Length: 65
Image (tube, rainbow, N blue to C red):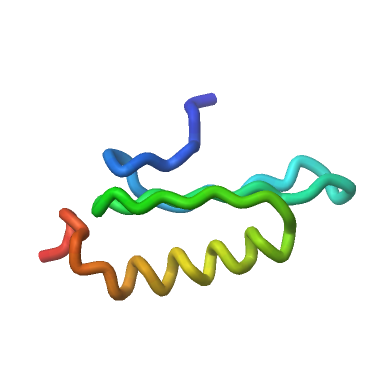
């Protein structure tokens, strides 16, 4: 399986929760260069919301028309 960790060259969001008993891990990277990583279920949920907000408002994205 390929590495699913997002990078500014391959932007996106990735969330992993290997089992119900372990905390989630999440990361995102934007084409503008901003990146974040977190550990924990609540933090992962917040990161996804932050990624969605950033993606919709980022002025530095290369993929915008």
